Image 1 (cartoon, rainbow, N blue to C red):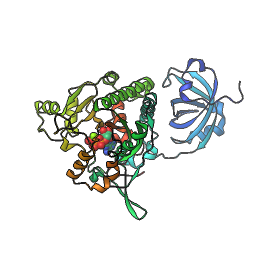
Image 2: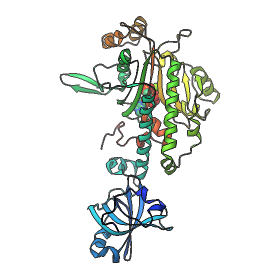
Image 3: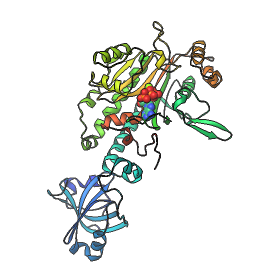
Length: 436
Ligand code: ATP
Ligand code: MG
């Protein structure tokens, strides 16, 4: 027998060739039950849980008495033999010869059945839960696939700032802060900076936090979220829609490939996710969206913005992600290029996730003409001086260009089938809450 068997992860114990082998495992006590002279410890590590059986006659009184008193979430190391055991959850267990306690945990504050506010106050502990761990693994795949997509397709990753100087677009949802002797703001989007970067690198992307002081609490808005943004010179709206759908299809395909266990643990229905791997996605114009909504009895008129409720209603028409394009200029940002043939609408698009989720990407073609952009800034009542540098981009070698922004937590929320965005981020910030 090996004197010092190697450390393995829980998932590696669940293999026939491990049966009869002596192993070491480290982790946390997930469940704990004492039956006479036996202790059943379910051990948790990043890869899963496994039952470990301690017998007094084998581990000795000292170890037995110490482990007997442990509460859940204590950290321990066990050494023992992998056995097949049909009665154990998962069919395998560890027969422990020796155990070492690292950190005792007594009276872990989360026992099950607590309310959401209590759980959010204890997020630093709740984050250990299997549900949140599972979601974080899916998010890892989403981020990995996103980066991979851009790397493989010749895009440059860049690092735009988070602190910004002027109260640009959407001042209503802006976080203001003290910056030395002046005011500054937390970035809501890297877009304007990415636009400046396309003049040297052409195709750029970034992953940064974006901050939005949303006026109300909803299931899909965070005050701080991770924003995956892309911007490219020479790209039309159509080109950018292709990038958007390829990116989302790639992300979904990677999650389906790498996170089978996680999706199963979350009991995610895969039918519609599988549809999302196929491109192109359906496209409708805003006009058609309004018609669909009116037919479905929604009280909405041309010119109204589409909120979460309207988006949810529209998703009932589709069994995969879909685009809405050509929105009225009044409900979209000043930098969006107007349609040449129909100047009441912009060359903008949203990509909506099905199953009620709604917008996961917003994008479009940008106004590249200096005078037209200046006029839009004036019409919106913005301070022209705040946009001087942005206008400069149209003064020195302007090019047609397009871009988009994807909300990482929105995508995770949809792929994982969550009913609230807060579980798509380890430490959620939203209106009225920032702790822990
Ligand atoms: P919404 O209409 O859903 O509030 P938006 O149109 O204001 O979103 P954009 O400015 O288009 O959002 O931002 C790009 C993407 O960032 C959105 O498509 C969405 O996926 C994500 N996003 C925007 N606001 C939030 C938020 N508060 N929390 C999480 N993700 C967000
Ligand atoms: Mg949008």
